[in-house]
Image (cartoon, rainbow, N blue to C red; front, side):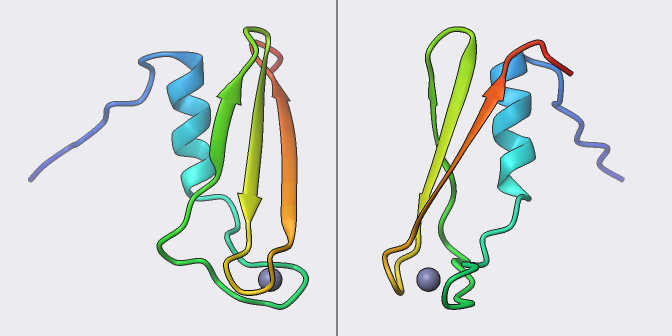
Length: 69
Ligand SMILES: [Zn+2]
């Protein structure tokens, strides 16, 4: 049995793995970007996520404030 639990490294990494499971289904065309992921960028106090739909090119963006939970 493998209890693979590597959560808790950094807030940034936690956010990133959180976003791994975030919807990758495009609200515009319904395409599910199975092999895709949100691109994360941090400014220090915020993490900016963006995802480009490979099917229709729709761009979604999200912003998270670090340490805001
Ligand atoms: Zn799309």
